Structure formats: structure tokens, C-alpha cells
Image 1 (cartoon, one colour):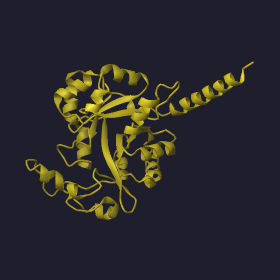
Image 2 (cartoon, rainbow, N blue to C red; image 1 turned 30 degrees about the vertical axis):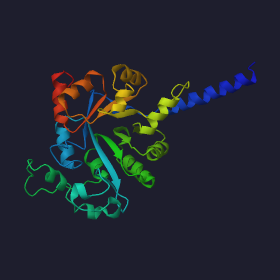
Image 3 (cartoon, rainbow, N blue to C red; image 1 turned 45 degrees about the vertical axis):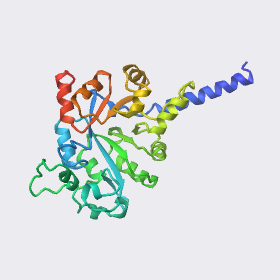
Image 4 (tube, rainbow, N blue to C red; image 1 turned 90 degrees about the vertical axis):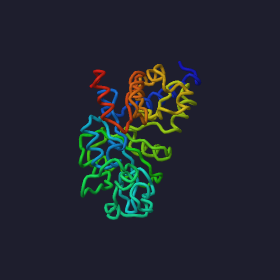
Length: 293
């Protein structure tokens, strides 16, 4: 017969085991190889204006496995694909995204800043680069794996975001990340952990503090780490043993943003699951030479 203390331990064990099972139910199809995955940062963003249909199309044609993009909400609560909250650097229009409607956004030139800062790259004649909506991306690429970074700190649009992902049946093709812990935490809760997410900085801190507890389970599926960070090096988060340990925990390890051929080779050699790059074609060629494509 169990003593009262032993009974309590048994109940706690069952509760932790149930939680572990719940968190491990997330589909892993997003992470299917070829490995390492080529994750095109805002598309092929050194050759064409970032976060545009044209940049994503080029990246896919160059061999990217995943396209990475950033999203904000407009004044009329439409998720659009753009990096900055203020439109000045990208479009030359000094307005915040939350102050303009989708119809206004469609009149802006997403290539303005790109060609201004890259005078040696010739712009095709009569070409207008538009800021796409997220729905436009999901509609155009129904079978494409997409890495979505939620830049907007406002949690109010998450339900619409999830509805949009489900409408296009993209739950298994999406990885979501956000530097705003409250946003990614609520996203996970609303989706019941059924859409893959990457660790925020707060997630990593919690992991480092609490992972000693038996049956501790991470609430994320992947790390996306800055390859050149001194902090990453300090804690050994770029070493083969650390990567292998995390992979054995069924976690993916991606590094950003790597464009240099030597560093791409190094990321491959240490066992990275994914390479986030502005030069997907270069990564593809390197992997092909290595027999990994």
C-alpha cells in the first residue's frame, strides 16, 4: 500500500508524463530532410528586394527548402510580409504599418530602399515590387515550408493568423518564431502546440534554468541562433556535442545569418539542421559539392 508521500509523487509523475505526451504530439513534417535545410532569409535577399514574391520565387528556384519571412499587421488588421515597422527604409514612405491600410500598402514600392542601397544592381524595367500579404504567400505556395517571424508585439492578431494558416491547411508547413515571448507563448497556447515554434530568448533562459528537473519538456521545436554571437560561443551553443545533445532531445538547431562560404561549410560540419542565409544558391552549391543535395 502506498504511503501518502509516495502517492503524491506518483500523482506528480503522472501529471508530468501527461504533459510530456501533450507537448510531443506536434507534427514534425516541417523538419523532414534534406538536411541541413536551406532557409532563405527574406528570400534571395541580396539579389532582389527582400520579403517580396520575386525574392521568394528566386530562392526556391535556387534550391531553398524553406523561405523565411517577417510579418506585421496593417491598420485594417491584415498580416503583411515586411521586416520593419516603419516603412521609410524599405519604401521611402515615413509611416508605420499600423497606420496604413492594405490598399495603401499595395501602392508602395518594396524595392525602393533595396535599389537605392545597391546602385550596381539593375532594376528590371517597368517593375514594381509589392509588399505581399501573408495570405498571398500562403495561397501562392501551398506546398512550401515557411519560417514566419512575428515582428508585431500585439497579441490581438494571433487568432486571425492561426485561422489564416488553417484556412490554407499549412499547419504542418509552418514554423513560427518571435522575439516577443508573450506573443510566442500565446501562439503556442492557442494552437495547443500543434504548429512548430522556435525558441525565444526567454525560452532559452528557462531551459538553462529549469532543464535539470526530471521530465522537464521544452515548449518549442527548434533553436534559431545567431551564428556570430559571442554569447552563443560562450555557452558552447555552436559545438557539435551541444548540437547532438539537442538533436537527441528531438530539437532542431538552425543558425543565422550565414552568407560566407567558409562559415557555411563550418555550420554543416558541426551538424546544424538548418542554415539561414541571404544566399540560398550559394548554400545549395556547397551542399551539392558535399553530396548533400
